[in-house]
Length: 549
Image (cartoon, rainbow, N blue to C red):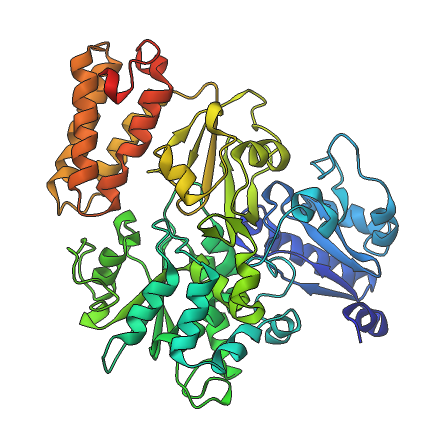
């Protein structure tokens, strides 16, 4: 029996109202209460499902009504509009609304004064229909805390496939898929898994790094709030593959809704037998808990994270030893971020080769790109590696929110490079980006229009590092402070080649001598701003390049 026929038989109209942080910030809870109250007052049977967000943030709160022809969406719905919507025959009129053509001027819907806009069938919205959602296939579709809904949409197929493999074969599956860490370093995940698996120890751990602190990023949060079971399944697969019996998800403290959703999902998973001493009746054990992060950016670095989990101050550890051999409490520890682990169930369910068919070169699979900053249609776009910034900006983002020409796009968080328009046709690929001094990182894309002050943004990068540095190594701790001073001298008018050379030398020292990526990557936005936008520093064309200084 289909979902739609069940609804028809019960006589209730199913309405989906999201409960992720973005929708809640725009009044989704008040909206859900208003719909329930108005329906009860009118004697209309409704079944309200609090789903996650589809990742189309400019449409939130996006309310969907189940109809025989699919789910029909209404954008930017406010609680104050609910009574008028019911007066117009909603939600029964959703089927007719969905058959009307969408406005040609704004095919994805937009705010309309007085009444929400019907955006038609949600899965036909071009922004969504053009994506290749593998990891994010269920977000916004299912009830995040309904285990039946999860399995009905393909959940647990990966875990069941993993249980049929021994540890070596499971690690080989990840290796064959080409999956690389989605947290920024892009290290081959299978190598890390095999290293932990082959380590001899009585106790091993899996730690999920959910301390998503990069500006403009929200993919981890979306997974935890909208499809937490896929992360739980990924952690269990990882634990069984490397011989760990305990998993910990380290979630940033600024994500209270994600923490609540994940903890509730873990309770459900344990009750369903997906976690605990006998995973799916296999006789194998995996326990999982959530740890609230300490609120420091540096704790997103894996060794500082381990220090924090052990109850110490978040300070970077020197390597070796690597965490895969001596991590949490000195035991072999697999550390992956949320997207890496959430990608694993698809790989085990559909096979490594299927995953490899997406992407290009050594960048296999898909990347969840997070469109943010000065952009008209911000949100999550999951596509195979190889997409260009120009496609993301124009076809998905719809240009800048200000309507002004875009000037620079920062990719990879606050320590990522600023790419000028001449580089927006470069395919998003780890190696192609590294060749121009940029990073793909966690897939954060922040757009700036032509009013942006690139010298000011370069100064901010150094100031951010000075504030967030753990202080353990000199190049990061002192270099960032000196970097702020040099940039300020240039901003005040001292544009001599001596100052420019000094800034480049400082950047080189930080890249070469820092203990971790915090100090090693802070020069990326500084150098790129200096090279591509010299006028913002008061320099003539070409004078910002390292060789010109």
